[in-house]
Length: 256
Image 1 (cartoon, rainbow, N blue to C red):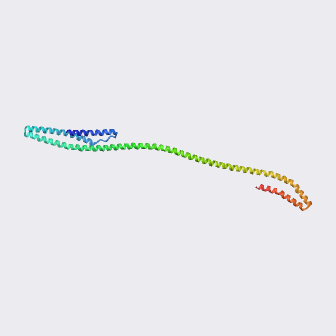
Image 2: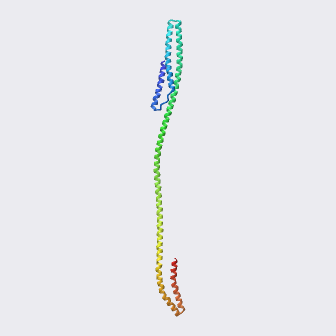
């Protein structure tokens, strides 16, 4: 009986220890353990049966002592009846002990399963927490990386744009220089052309003056030719051809 009481105490303290561990780990509340409830019920029956066995033993001892002092049919029948009651109580107790052992095994298995479930729940919660933390860190790292990449990209693009601007400036300066050169050459050509157009007018005036001055000589040559003959005509022809040359030059210049 004392042994059974010790076993029941151990069985009662086991759930408390498991509960303490669950509280320490801050696990989720485990579902109600049916095996543990069944174990408690059987242990209660076993405790009651243990009392019955003890009472049957006491009665058997008393019946045996009475039969020993006074051997009668009644005392012998009492002994026989007490033995039968004690035997029945012992058999019931043996069955209950077997049930207690089985119930304890079931309770241990159920407790192990509950621990596994709690561990799985804890692991799942930890994974979810770690996943959220990783996602948060990844978002922060991505933001920082994008910021760094953006800074590097802007720096490279600014350098490339500066190079392009410098190249564009050089091209624009070269084009402007070419345009200025062409404009200067055109202006110079226009000035030269204007100067050329202005100089022939003065030459024409001088040529006209020379022609006017040469007319009396031509008339004088004609007169001399009339007086002197053919040689004078030849001179006049030479003078006329000399006078025609400036006129031909002026006509050629005007065509140009």
